[in-house]
Image 1 (tube, helix red, strand yellow):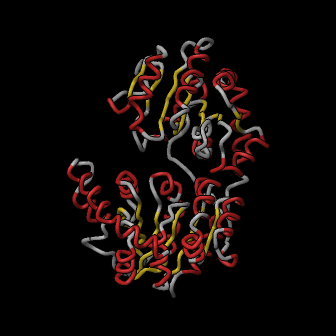
Image 2 (cartoon, one colour; image 1 turned 120 degrees about the vertical axis):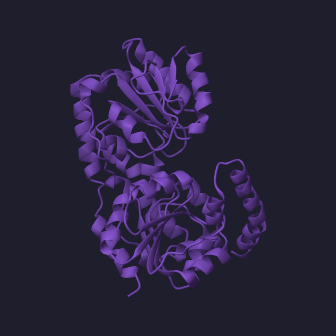
Length: 411
């Protein structure tokens, strides 16, 4: 642990310079830099519950939890920190009273020790998997209760932490409450040092996803499909599947939403090389613009793409990224397709497979055949109904997690 503190302290000037360069490049502001360095102009007053989520996905999934905590603790400020300005903007746009969103400071011991001493912190809640040792241990040393909610550890991450056993054991043992996402994550956390007495009810935050939009009827989206959150190595397979399916359904349109929008130029070149006409959302394109592939290279608009598509291929699963959530597309009545790499949501996908609520596709031919089959309303309706049945089984008891968190708060 001492070595980690020395290394992160030595790297701090370089990190500060890198952040300053982002300001000079006008990617962030000087106030953003101050937040990342822990130089907050204003600290939250009164009692505070601090919740940290890495980015949009974690915080969006936790919105129901955050709203429930705010309702239970009416005299308390809910401080939300995250790693990106887009996630901070998203939380601020929720318009929740007594919710304060900031960028998370760098993982420097003195920053968090100083904040723990100056904020009336009731508890610290970490969402999913953004583990930083100094942050967690600084709060623990100050006697602040710490919780991990929907804790998630892939096999690769667990193996990585195991190589630094002194750090991982100290950090994971510091949690007073751990609500893991699934059995595999719970076992990994225990193996890395978590205390058995800290283990609480399992919870999958993404199972509480909801949106205000209403899915379009099948007839309006039967010839539109979505490749959601694609990674490098997947786009070419999916584009070729689209090309193959269009031989039978010439009017079939594809929405391709890359996990990282900065890859859009590369994806556009791939599509154009296959003779497909592209429209880019970042250039102002609308869904009804004439094109073969609508490249959704923006953030924060996934609900629009789910709503418009009859079928969703959940990416991050054709390559070893562990897969992405099935809950959001299922909520929007998309028929679900996915690849073989599903470690991040192993139990929900196992339930889907058992109920016939999703289809495993490992190559362009299987994807194309599934797309053709699911243009028929009966086949799509059956699969969508099966998905709802399967995922309802994973909808964990939110009240149990909230009650456990309440017991951590200072009297």
